[in-house]
Length: 353
Image 1: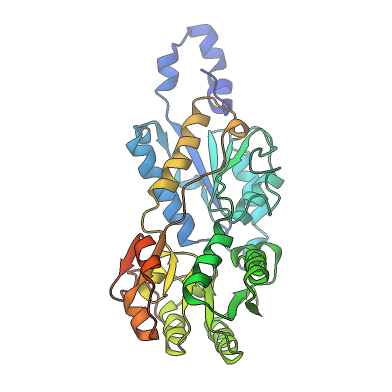
Image 2: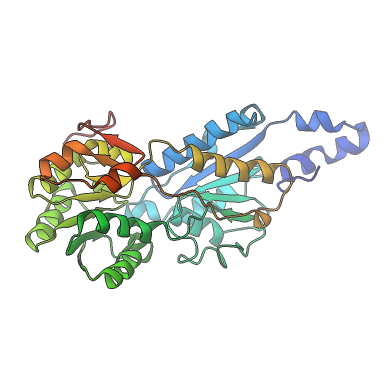
């Protein structure tokens, strides 16, 4: 059996293998160790990571792997913390007691590839658009022998089309930090492409990277004053329940009669967004990534794996929010939705300020 990440196995045991003729089952009994790297916390990364573990368990692999606590790295996104991204990634990749690193998100993956030693297998999930981010050569080839990533082509353009089909908005509000990667978390390029196709206007607000709760609310107030009739909830700390009181933001939007679509999914929809991706069930995502993990640990080159996940996007709706907005949802969207909430329930992790 070929192990790509064989440093931990081959170097420490090489002499023993020759001198003592240790059998293959003795080596196989040693658990594979998987590291984890994210630039900063996101509920999407957390849910994806947990779904991966569940899928490994269902595949009978959870007792074959372990996730060392000291190999879980999350420096953070504040300016001073960003300076730690590269050294933290380099230190993680240099470890000889790991068999693989799981990369959560676009920023983390970009950093890991910058310090890539060409040996440690890297599997990435939660990446906004690996092709546009130039993390891969194309959707069929990562271009890097020890790297692979889950890709869902056209996911966000389809999302904007679904939202526009249902709401028919004329001015869509976008809130984002004006950096290359942060624009991807707000899907600015995809929004503009669909806007040109459908004829609606994009109203943008660029928020500082060192934002405060007051700046988040001020941004929403400015967008509302500009006449937006729909808002796209991006992957942004303003909408992270563990860091901000997102209820204030959702209440403001619904109070102004502005329907919203939540990129981060079900939690935001149940808590007060009109629509969003259905993300309560991360199982298909977990299965896809777990399959990648297993194949790599069995000896397949990461670059040889299929990266495209063809699973169709799922939609979540909130009927109570539709009622508050005075909005009649179509039979088409009701029939096509995977989750339909009839009330507003805030997440347990809500941070109140």
